[in-house]
Image 1 (cartoon, one colour):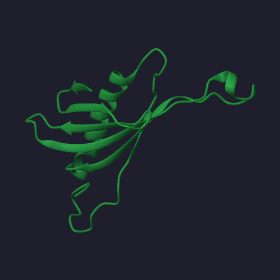
Image 2 (tube, rainbow, N blue to C red; image 1 turned 45 degrees about the vertical axis):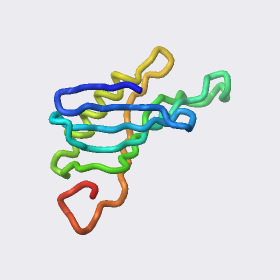
Image 3 (tube, rainbow, N blue to C red; image 1 turned 30 degrees about the vertical axis):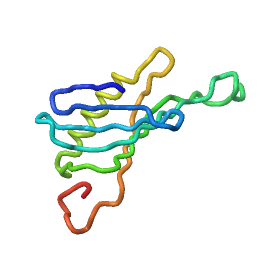
Length: 117
């Protein structure tokens, strides 16, 4: 388990029982709950495992936001802060993700201003 602190969020990440799948909890500056995420690294095959003329694939991260209390107006700030934290923390010599793809469940129709409820 590791913890990353930024100006706006604290991100706690732990391994799960599945290979290369991680679970994260995000808290705001006052320790309030912000989101629960699942993190899945997209790792390309080694070059010796693909045809010679295959294009080069870049590593990336998939972040599934399972639950969140983020307003739609704060979505860009939320994704930017989480992206910065994860890219800095999870980069290694053998794995340097270039980008993150965020996925969200279908929003509730009861609260049109809330991202998830």
